[in-house]
Length: 248
Image 1: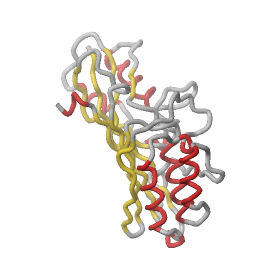
Image 2: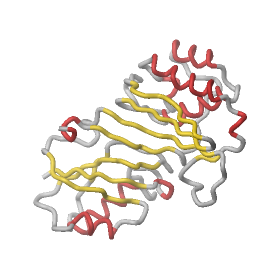
Image 3: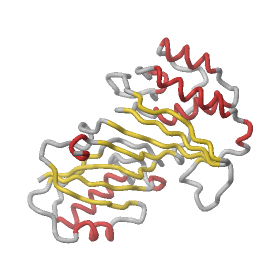
Image 4: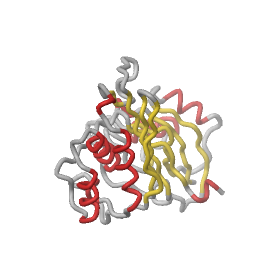
């Protein structure tokens, strides 16, 4: 049978979702828990996407195949086994052809920035000193500009193996609340490093280091910005994944 897993994780201690040699990943940590409790050493789990080192997920889906039904109280048991940084919300059976990665048609991220230094949350939001140096109207205009396009080569990290730069953008906007800023972005898919590059671009425009016209020209010609800036991973969260059959 195929099972879907809904989970959340704090990515600060992990080298991203994907299993990597000699590194601690979210995927490998969950697989070890499943293999141990179910006594299935060959069991593998497939995630809905690859989050980078230090990136978090407040809502994430994955699937795995297992012959037979899960033991009673399995969700509670695996949560006790897993570290505090990973929480399993629910595990439920689905059709065998349903796929956590390929069937997702909507993905949403948030990027959190604070202007107030907080020693208790240094790895879950980006701290920027003196937010008043940024022009909020210019930042918002830079974000809104992206909604006019469906090709995003300027915001794809070099070395990507993506076969197409096309993304259907659903949302791109900033929410300013005093010292706490949140960027909201949603699309059918994302390119490697895309959200962090977009946030960096918006901040660069807001600080006057990059002009909005430069961004528009880069998007029109599908060429990279000369002053592109990838912001740190600590403020980035995957927040929503949608599947047509789960909504039904």
